[in-house]
Image (cartoon, rainbow, N blue to C red; front, side):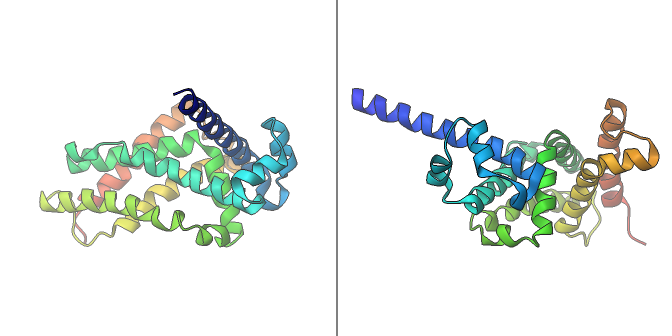
Length: 216
């Protein structure tokens, strides 16, 4: 019994150490990119060692891929928790859009990491077997909502779920990724509570309006 308890504590401590490393590494890679981030800095901030980090993740690129996987996994997990099946199609699509808005607004490091990975032409995301399957759940959720909306005669025909995903993601990413240049050009801070509330509602309105408007 004592051995089992000791093993359990070690496993929990190991999990906590790994989570702490991922949290600090996320901020480091978001701020400095893969090439600029320093494993020594991550080790110091997590009060561990470079050797320990490599024990968990293999090398710097392995740590970076783990950060990518964890970042994308977080938003996919959030989508699974929304319980959209009990909502009508209009409320479901609006809820999904607003949840994506909230996630991106609250996780600016995620946006920076995605931008950095695009600068690397998606090299590391392509190497991840875990990430290869993380896009499908998002599309499946949207496909189910669209199918229900069409069956109820509410949504238009011929809409691709990926197109709606692109619209939602584009809106959410832009307002987070371009906050500072937008402020410099237009003297408008996209992070204010007033604009956050307005834009959150606007995103849902835009998607619902498109889906419920008959094509020409």
